[in-house]
Image (cartoon, rainbow, N blue to C red):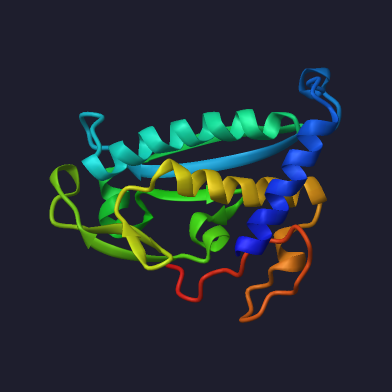
Length: 187
């Protein structure tokens, strides 16, 4: 995973240094990287602390990704989805979930999802957690979202679909610019 990240950063650095003038506003071959985030929102428009903290991190990460990927002609778009209490009660693990370029955050980071007791708005529900490199997060930090977004941006830059280089198998192909292997226990 570090090798892929290093390659991606090298590509970004080289592309950024070759042309310091922004081609973004000229509309030349701009690609879109979509980040989707969903969380429980109750009847009063409130969410839990976990999702509230993640919301701040997602917004921060989107701004960082926009700045970082602009020179590569990649536009970053955030889509937020509110889950109703009834939808949440059917599957609490759908709350506080992030997709980047149509793939779960966990897939980009070779992470796993889990669950833990939440609070307030969520009641007694077990809500989504993410474990990356042995560390479990209840609220997803901006750094993880940015890292996953950079992996996805590198893939957009190369024009290689994730499925072509990262099949849902135990050993993904070694293709430059491809993502890290997906976790084996995504939920």
